[in-house]
Length: 542
Ligand code: ADP
Image (cartoon, rainbow, N blue to C red):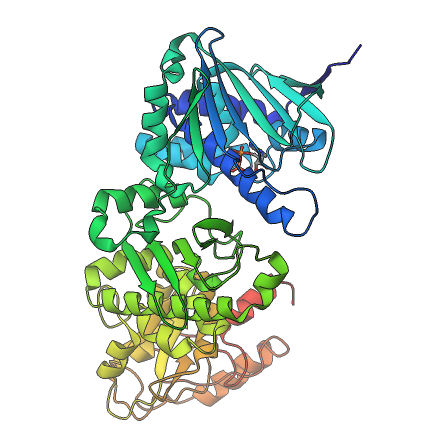
């Protein structure tokens, strides 16, 4: 007789199930979106793997089938995708790999109710949403390339079982034993309605099966292929919400078709909000690459990492449908598309930067990421620099490098900046006193990346960027209201005494005209790393 193995869920899964089921109850129809998206992904992955492995090809009529059974009170989703081995089932459905429950539950607790549904997608815990409508879920799967099938089953309590099964073809069946109050998900019209809301996004065919008849629920009409004039704002917004698991409105929508030497359609969005998952963990652009509608991969790096906040789809004619991962690395067409798309996003940002209020909201969400481009992308540096925004010692709100330059004093040769950990430290810094007294503007930088990019940019409009903590800055030619003047008598003796007391800890002690209220200030040497960089290096143990 066959044995049934019983496994406990990873400790995190139990709590997560509880959270998902209770926190998202009012949006529970999203379970269908999550399961269909997984099924479509599995088919895309199989098509992609089939390019380099024999015998994995998708059958020509491959679909996601949604089968309600009123008599049995089950809803079944079947796909002809890549499938899961026994180990995959235990790993993917029995543990939480990508992100911890704690991060998820904290974010969920902080989120507004209408933000919650998008969270489960962003955190990669979509499968568990099945337990919102089902009190028992069985998953029977056969990995493409293997003869073995396994069934995973759980009632959403503390454990799941695994046992051997039969499946004639590779793929996965997910059977939901619906809860008493989930009858609506046995009604084909209801299922059809839910799927149609976002079907334009999924290019794998989806069918709802009723009394043996299959009804297609999506036309595979990829929205990005339609002319702009035929698309409503609501459709764009709905698409945006699907593509990035968002719930807000996009800050910018870019939809265009390139024709001529290079043919592609692009539908891209700059989100209106920061995603809940920090964009620091995974720095690769996730813009989806399609070839003639078919999804190929979201790992083509269609945009540089410093534009990784941009979401959407690029669909091209210029690659073969059977483009493999290896080809993607080396094909010149993709490099050209990348360049064109990057240029277009930058020019959109430049044009939106003319509306300061709207641009500020973008900047506050994604500015620190854009700054990375200054040191990562030599070629684009000069296009990115005018898009940067800063706090400054001279003006309220945000300012830019061109604005700073237009305010420079006669005889001022450099653009001055100060980097510190936060705005508070900046405001109080004695480093600023001498500059303030002379009416010389200093840019105030407190983002993590600010320790790195000014040195990479080096100059803007021929003006060198200089950290005010670098000791050799000479302000004596600017007259100050309260600073400077004659050095008091005895200063040389004082300097000598301090120098003797601190010998070994500092390289020099000097009298300065850069202070007004403070007695002393730390300073970096004229040529070495500035103070913030030294702090970072110390923290890194160098
Ligand atoms: P996510 O899809 O965001 O990774 P899920 O909880 O929805 O998170 O799914 C977990 C994993 O289980 C998926 O990443 C995938 O590897 C696997 N999986 C889920 N459904 C299927 C399916 N129908 N076919 C193959 N693998 C699947």
